[in-house]
Length: 447
Ligand SMILES: Nc1nc2c(ncn2[C@@H]2O[C@H](COP(=O)(O)OP(=O)(O)OP(=O)(O)O)[C@@H](O)[C@H]2O)c(=O)[nH]1
Ligand SMILES: [Mg+2]
Image (cartoon, rainbow, N blue to C red; front, top):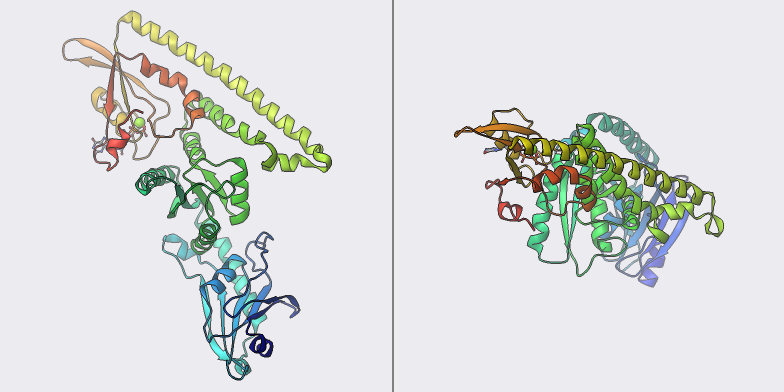
């Protein structure tokens, strides 16, 4: 390889499997070499690809960033570069690196653990390490770690991703809010990245380079989930999770998840389920490019899956109708209750405002109650009403309410209509604002 590289002034590389057979031969130019793109071909978790790359370098350089990127993205067993002497064409030092298994201990902090291990550079004639022994022990270690990691860390480890098509400050603000949402949902936020772009990439949202960077970062941090700040189509979720091999969700789904975790009363649970199904339905139908239509495709486009998909959609629609009826009934019950209160002539005061602003705490303070208040977004989903006697022998009803946030998914808004209607029939609104939050001016806007 050294001789040929020397004559042609091109890098030459081979991919060798564990039996020592050469599976691919690549020819590059004098700076770089391109590896086949088999990222899509999955590697079993806890394993490497079973191929090591050995290639020549003509300029005396050690492993390049591209070499390391390929090593990580393709999960190669090893990346080695043989230095070819410019005058004689004889092989010199061999630089090599392999990936490192993640350790459970390293997952406790959000600092990036080391991703690569460099072997000591040696001249070809002195290479004496047993490659198979090395790779086997690495895979064993990886399998062991996976078991302990799984036990140690059950929460989702997440990287937040934003794309800024407008001003960066808007995107940063939105990301700060997303981070709070993620924490409220109980996931561990390990990193945040924002990419500035002219437009969102219709397929992968981010550009190709940024996506590669993200994959490496996720590998490095042992992340298992990506949360996108923008709304994702079903097709985007699919191509992103295929490209990254990670769970991918968007902002709406994160909020829905929080609501699902927090709903206590049967009314709250029904509202959340309705919102979830409404979110799911268009994603079941999302047309040509959806995961479901691909599954349903079959030969000639009408495989057996199509009927299954129809049944799924119908079941979801049926369930949606059922839930909507339930909610309508609740709404009427609430209306009756309000009428009853109106007959007693009690004015209604509602405490409204951004989520986590202190609404429930204020209700507690005013009425000496013990409604649940917590440092977490959407702690209240089932609002409480309490009587309050004002100093001049006047009684009022004070309502706690569900908090607001910008870009609340519309399905969620409509599902919680019954609860929100209470607000519109109040005699007085108290707007709670948390002025200790740096974003309080934006949070107190009602547009
Ligand atoms: N320091 C301080 N903390 C407060 C005050 N009011 C509320 N908090 C805290 O802020 C956090 C959120 O309060 P909540 O009353 O749950 O807020 P909320 O508006 O009802 O929130 P959601 O129901 O989640 O929308 C809690 O940890 C409260 O203890 C205040 O006046 N001062
Ligand atoms: Mg509350």
